Structure formats: structure tokens, C-alpha cells
Length: 281
Image 1 (cartoon, rainbow, N blue to C red):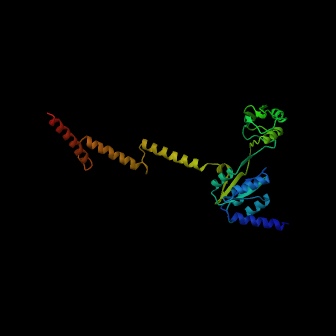
Image 2: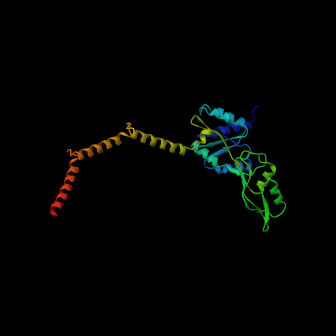
Image 3: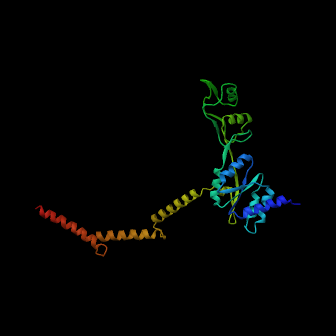
């Protein structure tokens, strides 16, 4: 039997979803509660993050399918630890907002390095003591100089894709080096009957617009070069033809309403030149 609490939760979810233009599923695996609260604060004004049981979120989505066509398909992206994200922003803009909410944290040990992890050279805040050998033990060249613990050179401690062992993780935490990204994992967003998957949402709209502009300009230039008539090129071809005809008419001294003023100006210049020559005799 379904509990009254679960029924109320589903009804609350339905009400929230129904009033949102964009509905998304995001992964929250491994994000501590304090970080979830920080993410909620960073999304304030743009989106609402709701954490609930996977089964209850799926029921809410399916119950709204008659009002929001294809919404139930979003339930296919609920797995592991998931949450709903609701907004009235454009889904691509929302995806950027979600990405910006991600932060980095220290490793616990066992994670795969998302990128090369480099410990920079320089002074540390450590007091001289066993910490020097602890640093050296995990492959970080350290020494005591002028009463301070110093890392001698920039050191690659883990390559991208390699596992971070527990000892190194503890040392990175002491050094406050935070190589592990933490944040919402975009699964899929829904808007106006369409499901936008992660790979689509990660597309940069500005780049696409710039690519379209470049393609349009290239096509325009090609049309001009091969004399291909389009709505955009015809006015230019007509202007070019007019200028060619005008130039030809002036060169062969052919009288038309357009050439006469140029021919008269040309004749005037010639007359002035002759006058100057006669005046010098």
C-alpha cells in the first residue's frame, strides 16, 4: 500500500513540474549534502533542484504525460542517485548554468584523475617536521629552506585517467589541491515535447550561430565568383552590370542619359587642357 507521505510527495512533484517549462534529470552521485545546498544557492533565480526518491520522480513524470507529451520518456534517465531540475530558462542556457555550478574538491582516494594533477613548486604553510618525508613518500620533492617547507619543482603526481591512491589524496587535501570536479551531471532536459540529451545540451549555440554565419558568407562569395543568381546576389550582379555598361559607354563615347554627364565632364577637362596649352604659346 502506498503511504500518504509518498502520495503527497508525488502530488507536490507534479505541481512543481507542471509549472515549469523545462524539466531535467541530473545525476547527484557522490555530491555531499553541503555541496547540494551550495548548488541550490547557485541556481537560485534560474532553476530549482529537487531531490526525491527515483520511483516517486518517475511516477510524477508519467502521470503528467497527458499534459506534457513525451514527458514520461524523461523517466528513462533516472538511475543511481538522481534529482529533478526545474526551470523556465532555455534548456541550452540552463545547461550552461548547471555547468557553472560545478566546483572542485579534494580526492578521497580511489578516484581517477580527470586531468594531469600537478603540484606546483614553492613555499608551503607546513611547519618543518615529518611532513617533508610524507611529501617525499608520495613523490613530491620537498625540503626545508630558511625554516620553511618548500616544494622544489612543479611535479606531475598523477596522469590523467590514473587512479589517485589514498596517501596521495590525503596529501593533496593538506595542500588544498582540488582536482576532482563535483556537481550536477546533466542527463537530459525536456521542453515542448522534446527530450534533449547531454551531448546535444553541451553544444555551444554561439559556436553554431557563428558557423552558420561563416557558411552563409562562404556560399555568398561562391555564388558571386561563379555568377550564380540568387536573391542575395542578383542586386550585386545588376550593379556590376550597370557599372560595366557605364564604363563601356564612356570609353566608346556613346551618349545616354547616364553617360552624357561623364562625357561632358571629360570634354570639359580636355578643353581646359587645350586652353592651357594655347595660353602658353
